[in-house]
Length: 501
Image 1 (cartoon, one colour):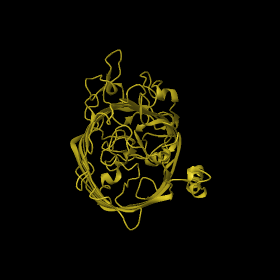
Image 2 (spheres, rainbow, N blue to C red):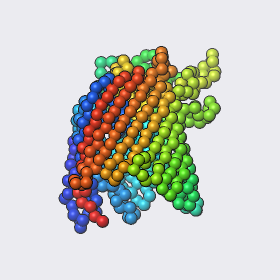
Image 3 (cartoon, rainbow, N blue to C red):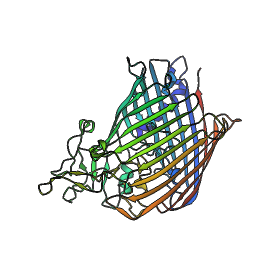
Image 4 (tube, rainbow, N blue to C red):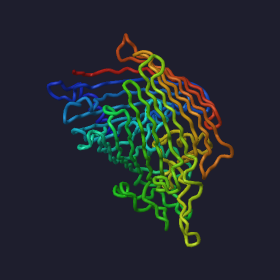
């Protein structure tokens, strides 16, 4: 913790201490601060108040959050071969998952099109509208970011010799989870599974065919993969039902996280790849006209080979979406519709081949769950799409302290719209209808339904530069999360510490 504070203080005062003659790192540095308060009543905070806010959404009806940051965007040096960016971003308050967060703390160093990112950084979902989408399936914007070392081609890079018609972007990253205290507190007094000091790995290879400057139709597709591995496990149950020793080393190494292999501590004779492996196939088709565009996309999530490839026929589970960006007008700017279906999961049964029954059935994929690492989550929030309910909701569902996602069979429709009546005023609306059947392991007797609504307007002051006000109303209704009504007021102020042309 001391090292984090030292780094933050250095980043906070360094831009103020340098001049343009001494270092370009002190140029084009931004600052920002915000105060956010929520109030309301009901069983939970409104769903879209809590979710898709990088883990900083309130979980209680009444909450407060203060946040401040300084940053220098790496794109500031876009005309240089070498580029440097950094950010320090902290948040504190009550009614949230934690009272104090170092939300972002990173340094980006880029040479031409290759970037090395060190630290904890908020990253948007692939191929989706961050303001209007329900979120990515593997790595979304729902949970707090993990500190990591990430080497990437951040933007599509045209491959030489393809007449500017083929481009790629890619990344590889290794990091660590920082929710040890939250997990142990969440499971305190129970015999439920949790882990400490586990590690993180992700990688992607995404491709693009077409050039919208030459022809309006483009296709993007690729594979995104992630893995949780290493660390220590508590209350881990063996293959035959016996409990393993507390703090058992979960094993795993960097090679097996990159190329799935090895085995878990409780595999017995039926060996799985070490760690919690998952990922998404991404596809997006865009038509980009002069002042409007329309795109259709698919995010197919998988937990193992049965859904990564087409083992049981064509994929039945996926997030399907359409995004429309309209010509500039005073009424409606953007529209997103998405359908999320995760009902199939390869079928209800899983069976390892035995002498008595040699048929291997790789079904019951149990999305966002693992028999060693529990839920695909960080600090109580799922790291993917929040419509598969996060563990933080388990207490409301009578499953206190359980580190699993028991409500992963989802059929949902989601709409997001946005308008900008003027340069200073904008608004957005999110509405989601979800039907949930629980999971194959814990089915519900009757389908649970949820209606989640967000109405939000933001006004940027003309008289005081950088000052803005945002007012939102949130509403939950239905048997899935009960009733909730709430209001959220955010006051934000941003500007430049030192800006050069």
